[in-house]
Image (cartoon, rainbow, N blue to C red; front, side):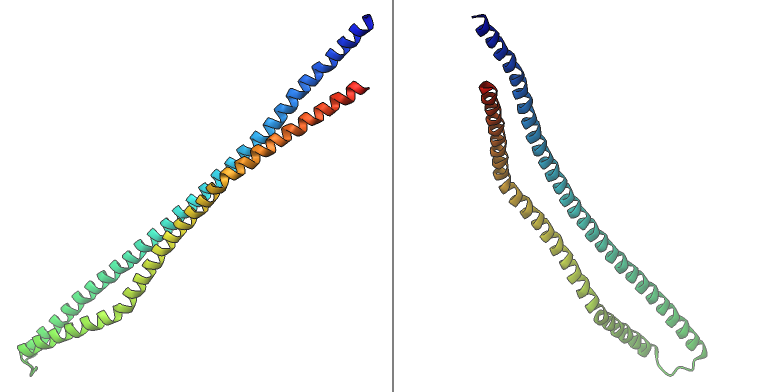
Length: 198
């Protein structure tokens, strides 16, 4: 009987380390899979941050390009205004000299008609010259707007696709975690049986 008590005490002592070992293994499995899920979440957040940064950078570049084209257009308008002022002043000086000399055979009405025709022809030539430039700027604006919309749609589609697979991935992780626990339990049980047989 004393021998049975000693064996029972020995079995209880052997079971204590197994319980602690079981908790340690369960804690290891939980820690391992928790860290895996956290790393997946961090990777997803980093991916979304990169996508947001890409969209923001694209928007800023497009905004800069539009402002640049507007400033070029303003510069052109300013230079056109300056050239018109200089031309008007030059014509005025030429007319005042010619009137002073009185060698001009053309009357004032003819001069005014000539000025009006010259301004009209100049305006038409300017419109003709600006048409390809304006159409090019319009096409570039449309391309940039379409690029921005397609980039946003592409990012939205990629996120939607990832979110659709997110639940599947979580289910696989849950199954893998449970399988891991089962393997640990089987290993513990096998070890217990091995210890009991010895």
